[in-house]
Length: 477
Image (cartoon, rainbow, N blue to C red; front, side, top):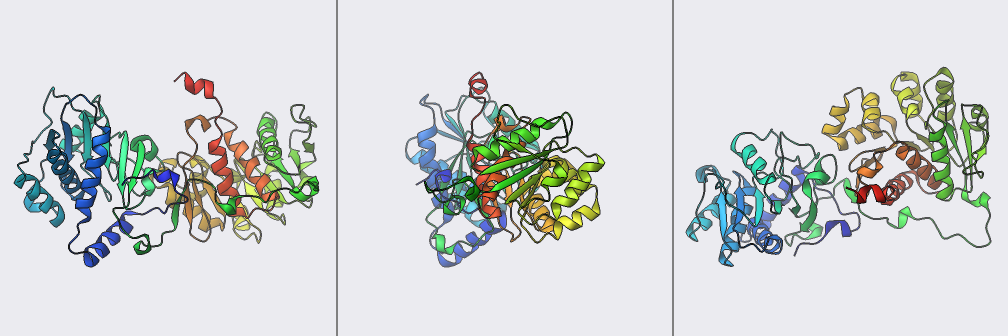
């Protein structure tokens, strides 16, 4: 029975290689039970709840691989239930994988027919997308690309099986074109590409059917979905008999002329998320008080970086003038957890000596780049980062021995031990100036209160995504 995967706690993420290994082990240990039959039956069950009540047939697009086999099994079940179906496929049964070939034969033996193209002017109650599954490694072209374009233009729901056709299941990038699904029924476990890059825009509402595979038989994976906070992400309850000194003194350095707002946003967020006290070191010496949040303290940046702190962030509004470079160098020597953001990251990218010092820090280091900053740190293009966000985040984490939050759709949080998590909160309303500065303040506050660095970054990213600013604007859309 399909479940809502985002209701689970930290469900594992499975790559194409993982899924193929699971399939192989299942075939060996369950020779008489086909996962394809289970997948097709699950797809038919969900399709029955999604199809419109127009009485129009269900359009089923069946590809040349096992994903097409899943679709053919679904067609057979729907037809047996009295549902009209139109199966479109140009697959050669002699060249299908064994399970898919059996599904093709069973469909034909049940009286099912194949169409070689989508009938013109026909209305449908639902589209089931079984053209391409996991492991697609080329651009979609030809008939399949044309069918995807036609399906995307139809005024009926679209259900993708496993992943929307054209979406890379490992990275979330689009191979030429992709089905824009309203619902995706994914099998066995979640795929990373459903949650990051273009995945969230193309997958629609996610449904998961484990097909009865024993969780104990699944491989251990380094990736998980950050669906909700766990105990490790939580701070202990505050005793009534307590004081600000128990909850950390954190510093935030940045705020050059014309960019002071970035530091103020970060500082205010740090206070809102529980830091006992927050001191800003702004480069614009004209700023000595925040009248909107007078609890913030101010210090000369060069003095602040030498203070005994429980957490330090540098970067919001920092700029790249010579004083900024010196401050980053000093911050890297701070004997506390350090978060580097914005121009602090750009300075690292342009200065090999600073980069070496960052990688050698004996205290926890956190990096929060957007794709452009990550590209500069890695020496590649932003498009190269977006082509495989997980790999980019992991490379940065290994290079700097740091906890890294690669921001964007499905923020990827990578850790030095190889683990990574893809955040499932947030949305396009976060694409606004100051959003990253707020995240910096939130994470620094959690560090200052003693939360472990990796957990603090994950918690801040998740909580940041749960905030819903601009509700009125989104209501207009």
